Each structure stands twice: as structure tokens, then as C-alpha cells.
Length: 584
Image 1 (cartoon, rainbow, N blue to C red):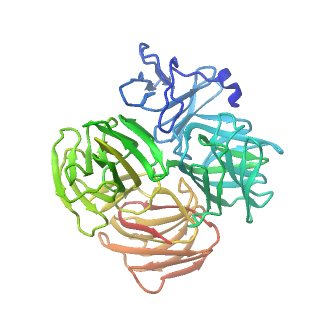
Image 2 (cartoon, rainbow, N blue to C red):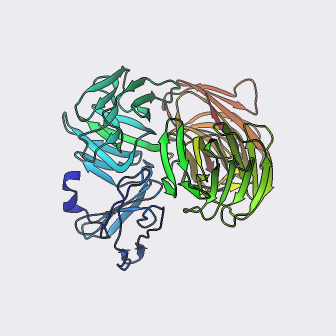
Image 3 (cartoon, rainbow, N blue to C red):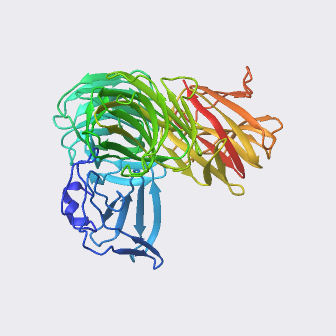
């Protein structure tokens, strides 16, 4: 479907009566609040109620909890884009009966997707676009951004090129695109409006091979990184476009896209940001919030967590206080906040709902000085660390809130936030975690996965890598096996896994795609016992170490997968993972 014909086949269930400007989404859909919520029924048994939107002061308009609904001209639901960016897709038979309903997690962008030319289909690996000879086609999201980190995996299937699109208009006639081009054998950054080539980076681009591109923008500066490299392959300045939509592009061939993720550059949080009061602006140092006298204002992210590590740098610019917010609700009336307070000269942990002061740590707080706060939660226990200290300045127990959103807070002044990062406490991986089958829960020892008889289930992170050190502790709780997963795709149908197997009494390295056993290392594996696995990769070489041994128990060469996602796996039982760390 082409965006210029959008009115011919799209209808939104509500009457769109007004637009507002959101921190990340310049276009938001409103509803007729007086209308009765409709019911959608599939196959006479499955119903979905579309709730009316509500508008409150200093908050975003919610369209059924922030989701976007797209319909055909016949009124059939085509897809739902959920607040975290996942897409529920619906397909029907010739009689109009629902035959499939599937979730596509190829992106965390939470705006409405629109096709502009070409053919776009959902595939097991993500989203695939196809363009005829010498044509550019686009798949564009209504979410917009100015300064951000935008990244994804691109695989050219048949000739042509595939690109990340950013700061674009709604039909792809303006904006920037950076591609991997299998025809010209380059990574190319170009202006979609003028066609100007801004920069080429020559490199062999193979068909069927996945390439990870990352774009980091700050004002007119654009940096492009390739395959998780620590240094950019492009570092240029161009001021043609200051803000615009995100999306992907295909030229003259067929391309598959995975893990298309955007986030504001001051934070690794992948959800949608929402302002609750105050004035919030992007500045050279990060994100700045300003609150009037004796007011609390919030910048909240839709990403949630229970047990995690959450940290960031806070600088009070003019009087007042700045805080990390966690386990919060969507409007900042419940949750925890820990701040640096230049008025009271303390680090304070407080309950946003009751206003209760849980703990103060007196310390001089200077204006214009950066303070690093880190929060580590496990159940009711909350530890707060200051300025990278090895011991917490607070170690308390409070059970008011078990889970909730992340964010930042300003009270009574102006504060700048940088490097606001959250991750699950069992791992240092910074991407978004996704469950692929099974039951996954946070437990005291780490992350626990459970798989039914003879099933493989996965907990996969969107962070990718090619050459790395990847390690972790695995405890098989009840029969079965637990594995580290690496160089994988987003649904666990490709990649490598190395496990400790309490059924077969081996450490096994295997190909998740073909099921091929690459190498077994026989060793007694006991239930309830902790085993440390470490994987070191370099090109096709894979080394596996057990229990901090100085020599690998496996040293093999396999070239099936050159790059991909990280994660963990459980087969046929229950396993617990902790200390899952990726390093270079």
C-alpha cells in the first residue's frame, strides 16, 4: 500500500479531532470521547475492546493505551502497533475469517507504519521489502526524532541496497538514508531529497549476509557505525534536515530488516518517552528538564522493569533537584525516585505516591557538577550507589512498588540528564529482551526460564555482535539444559547455542538453525550446580571455556553465522542464568 493512497484503504476507529506534539511522535491520533467503545470479534469467539482516549493535563493522548490501529477499506483490522513497538498482524481468508494473528518484533518504533511503494511482507526474520529495477521504496513510521541513536540489521537478499531512513518526511521525498549497497559495494549516506551522496564507505557487501548499521545524531553531526565497531565509519556534518520520521528503504532488489530500534541519545531506554509537566529540551549534554517553583515534573519512558540496574549522570543547573525514577506509573503519581538535591544537600530516596522520605544521605551537592547515581533492585531491596562507589550509600527494603516504568524527574529548578541506562540485573546486555516461548521470570539468583518437554525456548536480546567474549553462569534446576545463545536471529531459528545439558551429561555447541551438533564435551552436569561458560569468537573461530579454565574445552571453526543477537536458552526443563556479560 502506498502512503499517497492511504485515505482509500485506511480508516481509524475513532474520529480524529485534533493533533498534539509529542516528545517523540509529532503526530498523535485523538478520539471522539463521546463514542461507545466498539467490539471487534474474530471467528465468533475472540473479542477486543477499543477503549476511548483520555486527555489529562501534561500527558500524552492515549489511543487505546498508546496503540495504533490500522484497518482495510472493508473495516478489517490489519495491524496494531503496540506502545513498545511490537506489531500484531492479522490475516484473513477469502470469506473474511481471521486465519492468523502473529506478533512481529522487527522494530521498537511505536508510530503508525506506512508503505510508500514496493512490496512489504512480514517474514520470520523481520520485515522484507522489494523494489523493482532502479526504484526506491519506503516503509515509514510516524514516530519522529531530532537527536537519537537509530540502528538495525540489514540483509540484502537479491542485489540492490537496503537503508535506515531518518529525519524524513511522510512520503520519502526528504530526509537522510544510510544503506548497505550490494551493487556498489559500499555503505552510503545520502540525501533523499536532492539525491546528493554525502559519504561513501567502500566495503564488500555480500548477498544474504546481515550488516548492523547504527546512526547517532546530534544537531548537524551524523555518525554511522558498522557491525558494532567502536569507531564510526562516517562522521559528517549536514544541516539539510533537523528532524523527521524514521523508516527503512529498499532500492532495486529485495532486503530483510531486523531489530530496527530508535532511542533518544541520552538514554538506552527503548520505550516511548512522555512529558508530565515542565519543559523538556534536548541540549548538547543530554536531556534538560525545568520545573517551576516547588513543582515536580517528569519525563517517563514506557519501558518497565522489576529487578534491574538503572543509572545515570545528573547535573543540577539551577537550584532544585534531579532524580532517577523507577517502578513508576505513567503519570508520576506512584513509584520511586532517587535524587541529588542542591537545596537540601542530600541524595534522597522517596515514594512518589505518598511523598514518604525512605532514606536521606547527606552530602554537598554543587550546581553545575555531575553526579552519577546507580540503583540496583532485587525484590523489595533497593541499593543506591553514588559516583561509582563500590559500596551503596543506601541499602533499604520497601515493598510499595514491585514493577513499573523508568524515567527522570526535576523539582523546583533546571537539571540535565545524561547516560540514562537500564538493564536487567542478571546481564549487562543493553538491548531489548524478548521472550520466544516458555516461561521467563526474575528470581533471586537471576533470570529463570522454563520449557515444557522436548521444547527449546529463548530469551533474546536485541544487542548484536560479531567478535566478542560472552559468558555467564548457568544452573539447571530440573532436568533439561540451559545455554548461552549468540549470533542468533530474533526468533531463535538461526544462530549458535552452547549449553550445559543435565540429560546428556555434556557441554554442547550446536547450530540452532540446522540442529547440527558442532561439538560435545562430556562432563557430569548436576542439578542445582552452577556452571560458568565463556564463549570467545573471532571470525569463524569459536572457543568455549568451562568454569574459568585457562584452556578451552572446545576450539572449532564454523562459518554458518557471522553476526547476530545474544540471549539464553532452556530445553526441556528449568534453568537459571546470572552474570550474563558481553565484552569485547
